[in-house]
Length: 138
Image 1 (cartoon, rainbow, N blue to C red):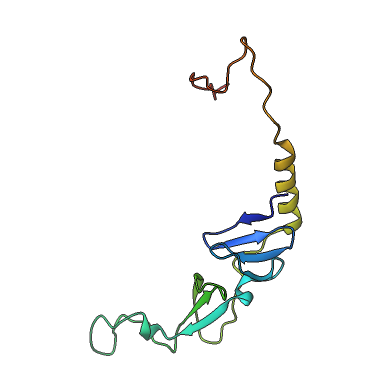
Image 2 (image 1 turned 90 degrees about the vertical axis):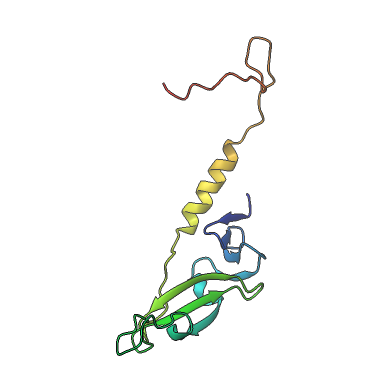
């Protein structure tokens, strides 16, 4: 079985070990049956460090830290930001990806079992280098 399946730009699942992994460096984060965010380094950030006030006065169009926090999730191996959330203060970290690991394993195994070596071409059959377009309708 192919060991890793890419799930997002920065996350893979190692199906043999059942682990979330960083796509960039391969660092193993946490069990694939758990929330990958719990295996990351967290930076609970004040929105004032990201959103500057647009105007002066009581309303600045920058979110106040009493209303929102920015939570950034980083790979402990390479420091790549994997995800970020904007959450109300006190809100727990939520799970945004939950996969059926057993079905994913079965799907990957069934695809790999369908891969066959090509039959040798004969003069009456199209060759691998045949330049005619494939008819995908039908």
